[in-house]
Image 1 (spheres, rainbow, N blue to C red):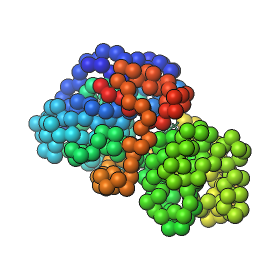
Image 2 (image 1 turned 90 degrees about the vertical axis):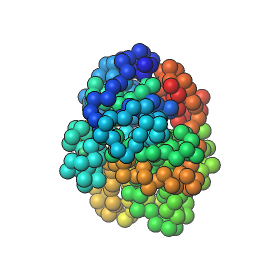
Image 3 (image 1 turned 45 degrees about the vertical axis):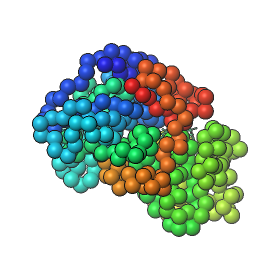
Length: 351
Ligand code: NAD
Ligand code: ZN
């Protein structure tokens, strides 16, 4: 089959690889209908990530969905022909951490991610087919009326954006600032609106991304106009927003979020930090009495509850899709998403 494989920094290629096969009786093989390029793929693409680089030749991608082509003998919850979406992290559903609803900490799979640094075991979703283990636990059935563009992000960035907003503890009437108007930030923005804020700001420097954030109800704050913390304070009577949602994944926006938020406020962060440790204004956070929350998203817990919100259009994830390319053109998809060319926000891939 065709798949997108990693060959080094800024080098992903469409190559021919062996078809995946059922290994365990609890596996399924999914014939992929749509996958996507994630901001987290860019960390690998750039060779960032604390030595945990994907192996050369590994199949990329952890956002994918499709139809079940083959099911192992022990699979009960789904069957051949079912349309399913799967979370980005590989988890068993049964170990100590999975039972504590922390599937990203699964000890059975060693905290694996599809297409991640265990790519030799768990191939990625930027391919024609994929082996999905623990199928009864991982597969979420997708109703026929939901498009791929609306369903796909349940497995990763929609759940991540939602968790970011939820961790922000937004109360009705609050003022919220979202740092980053990329795919995750835009979905955090949509999710934040569900909690009844009076005002939402979106911080970025990319004008067309800020324009979509504005269409989604946010007031844009451009980094090109100077320090975002100062701008946000000026826009909120000198106080700063109640809640900051960090959706970038670097020291700078995390620091800016701490500086911006009002005393007693909350900073919720879902950006993946490529630095293994980083400096941040701990003293300022302490004396302002901030609540700080961060972490990888346990997407499996959110797919089932968020699906009806997408069905009823309370969340409209497909609005961030700007490009749909044939799978073989994924190298171009990575390049334009990375360089923010051609007004790219979310790049979808069709095998
Ligand atoms: P992206 O790179 O497209 O978006 C990041 C945006 O932040 C860009 O538009 C960029 O211009 C903007 N930006 C850069 N510096 C900024 C600053 N100082 N202030 C405000 N905005 C700034 O990526 P994405 O797909 O939206 O992903 C965002 C982050 O979320 C990545 O780090 C990704 O790895 C992470 N992520 C985390 C999880 C999780 O489980 N926690 C899941 C998916 C993605
Ligand atoms: Zn587990």
